Length: 236
Image 1 (cartoon, rainbow, N blue to C red):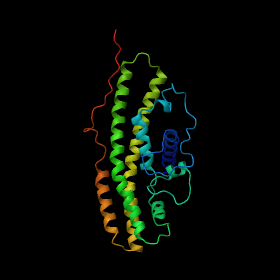
Image 2 (spheres, rainbow, N blue to C red; image 1 turned 90 degrees about the vertical axis):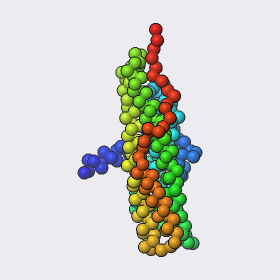
Image 3 (cartoon, helix red, strand yellow; image 1 turned 180 degrees about the vertical axis):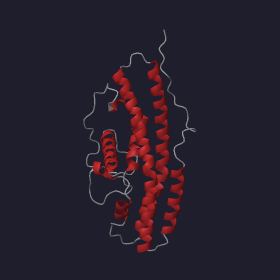
Image 4 (tube, rainbow, N blue to C red; image 1 turned 30 degrees about the horizontal axis):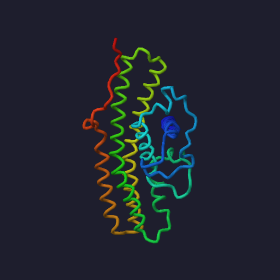
């Protein structure tokens, strides 16, 4: 069990440091700007296959949205580190503490925080899954092109394959985090109601129910428009 937890913790940190350089501020989620936001850090030369410069627009969006969905839905009350937030992930206990940790004039504000987070997820999840489908289709073309490319070195081919596996791992990490988000909202509203019953709970429960349905849909790329890319085949 200890080895499994260590492996999961190691994967999360690897993901954090890989993604940190390509996360941009903007309408890609609800994260507060972190202490190291916008810092590119060390990267491979731009002509290397593993460089951030080789990330497609879809891959950048995919990673940005992934960071938003694997992080705690509610921002911390006090400043914290990006890496700590990502390693913490979607933790129901911490989420409740952040929702109820303000000295609000009305408990309704606490219910509204949960409802806001749940309804934001209803918007963000389909956007992430659309980006994930675009990336998956592009990755399929990437792998197919390697079968025909004669001038791609072995190392470059390995880096291309590594990018595909990394993309898949990110997608799986997000899908695992989504049910945890639903349960965090559910736990929070149960505790709030036990402490401070309020009619505002009704709309929160409805938002959580809608979110549970959305999460259960999973990622289905069948309805996605075909990618514009084509296999690169040398003629002559």
